[in-house]
Structures are given as C-alpha cells and as structure tokens.
Length: 203
Ligand SMILES: C[S@@+](CC[C@H](N)C(=O)[O-])C[C@H]1O[C@@H](n2cnc3c(N)ncnc32)[C@H](O)[C@@H]1O
Image (cartoon, rainbow, N blue to C red):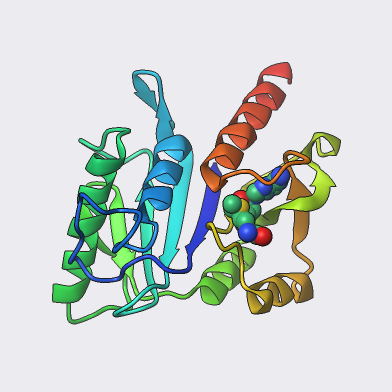
C-alpha cells in the first residue's frame, strides 16, 4: 500500500465551491485535484494500492480530512473538474452530518471526517507505517531501496508550516527529496510512483 497525506493550508472547507475558480476562491483546490489525479490514475486504469488523505485547512470550517481509497473509487476521472465535484459532495456530506468525528462515506471510496494534520500523522505512526516527509532538502530518494508501508507527506504551494515541520522533526520523521528543484506536489507524487514501480519490478 502507498499512502499520501497532502496538507492543503488554504483550501475551502465548505461545499460552496465555484468549479470555475478552483485556484482562486477555493484556496488552490486545483492543486489538491491534481494531486488526487496523479496519485490514482494510470492510462485507462487506476492504482488500487493507494490511499490519499487531504487535510483541508481553509475557511470556514477547518480542519476537514478527506480520504480517497483507490480500491473502492468509482466514477472518478482524472480531470480536475470531475475530482472537484467529488470533493464538493464530500464537503456537503460533512456539513450535513451531525457526527463529524467518524469517517462517513460520501461517494464510493471517498470518506470525510474532522481530523487535523497532526492527529492524522500520529494515527499513521500508531499503525506502524513508515512516514516520509517529502522536501527538496531531504535525503535523495535513490538512496532508499527498502520502503515498507510508506506514508508520504506533502505540502501545498505554501509548504508545511514551521510548526508542522517541528512536529515532524520531533517525531523523527525522515525527510526525503525527489529532485534538486522545488517541484509541484503532484509532480512529486508521479516521481514517487515511478520510483516505487521500478523498485518493485526489479525485485
Ligand atoms: C510547491 S512545493 C512547496 C513550496 C513552498 N514554497 C515551500 O517552501 O515549501 C509543494 C510540496 O512539494 C514537495 N516538494 C517540492 N519539491 C520537492 C522535492 N524536490 N523533493 C521532495 N519534495 C518536494 C514538498 O512536500 C512541498 O511542500
């Protein structure tokens, strides 16, 4: 299983989503949609061994965590607008649901609940997962040949906040780089998939 946690610092937390303005009034929802697309979609297929968490921290109701489970997704397609429609449905379900503290399924394979970044990270550590913070200044990914049950943590256009980075440092989360250049988060996801696909095939 490959898991990703994407922290969307400014992304809207109400279903009041303008599908024509994902980047502006929706707080860079376009970035999140591209990350979901690159996390799951192959040409004419889907990666069923992926779970993707988005922690939305924008107004008016943060934090909201949306979980996408590759083996269960149905009718989602790779384009940003389509993914944004599913996120809108998840946020509507979240708003309407009285119990916000348990996962509730909004559409097949897409779940939503109240969960902040730090508690999600702690949950994954408690599950025994290997947490990896993707950062330009981390250790070169190519030095790492054995990765079991990884959970990759990514920031958005702002990156992780200083307090998030300190939190990860205190937990001794490994910092790993996929390029000497600063990339978009979705490009990092593609590189990670490619690296792990090649590692798996060479075994
Ligand atoms: C557009 S970058 C963030 C830029 C932001 N200004 C910063 O300083 O963190 C989005 C995210 O992609 C990941 N990222 C970008 N370049 C990377 C690289 N070369 N190696 C690993 N991760 C990278 C990081 O997780 C980063 O938070």
